[in-house]
Image (cartoon, rainbow, N blue to C red):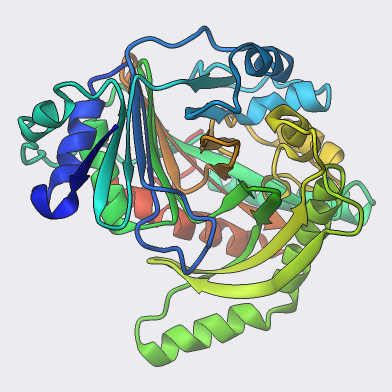
Length: 430
């Protein structure tokens, strides 16, 4: 291990390090943006790279075998879990369009990894020549991205009609709440993923931000939401349900916060998912240890106020990551309740497979502690085909107003659109 004082490194060291790392076929960068106040379980600042990686396990069962063979408990392991793992967890299927071919999940052990501490950067693994290579890396001024207005996979009228159909399902007792998402996309785009990530991180800093490269696939993530974190035996989840725009003045901003905090519809959405998360964690928790230390917390991010609750429990001994994922994945904030029927309806109503959107990226640290986010406020990109995808969603309840839900989707897209320096074509294209 090599320890280097931050005082001895240039101010743009992180930018140089990610520029260097982005040349590797497998690269993962996790960033908390000094926003630990919004989540004590915020990502560590961690950068990991590998030239080669094991074949992606096709299932959680294969991941469990890998964990037994080389130990997810002897990390670091960095990786991702796509939303489509739901098809194994609950014996579901998906037949919608996909512009991506992410493996269902993938974890790699880095050859070199950097961890940022309070005043030092720690270099692990193969460290010979790494610092010199990073310092020699130039971060060139990026040209403005040439991205056309994103097209909706679902037209606005069709989206509004789908919301009404979901409300009818709720009235008929099919679900209580359903998280309905839609895709905005562009094709044949030449994008600088690293420069775009930094623009996204500047436009929308978040405690669970991340950059991921998996061969020709990239994820640029500005997620504010924690899926799961394990700290020794304490497992924590922080579901988000409830959104308001930020105010244009301090008085307006506080009015928006209070409006969110006291909105009965937003509270009902949040509470239903909190109950779902409580039930999920109870499947892996010591009896009687599931707690909700914070209900309806209001947290400010660059574009929005969010209503965030915290659920935690003491993990039962003897369980591994795959056991926990089988009990909790996918996260209830991205499905609705009850979870299985909600996921069936999602595949019926949405026109795009979610891929890594609504999935999770994260890491497992030495000793077994881990952190995984909810992949939202994110951009998926394929460098080999130029396919670019932004997905957003909102929770539909019977009290939902379709136009307001559509507006919320656009609000959640603003950080990514700012980074891309483009807009959404809200016409009737499909």
